[in-house]
Image (tube, rainbow, N blue to C red; front, side, top):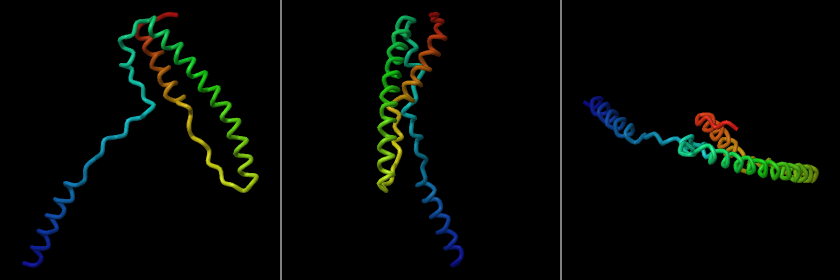
Length: 115
């Protein structure tokens, strides 16, 4: 009788606890650019967006290069004075811009926009 009660309680606890385990939705990638964004664009609009994104990439790359020089100097200073240093992992939005550029290129090919 005692073993039957323990088995029944164990089964009840397992059923209750299994109901508590839920899967969380995966976190979307902030750098993802949906191809559907540009589906309604014509070739002229796609070319304009490509030029805009290209200039943003150039600007972010230039500021990234300047930041790299500054980070290197700060890192040398910190290490020479016995401080720790943690490298900044930001990319000034370059990853998303490059993904946007790829999607625009694919959309231009799909719409047969010839330059």
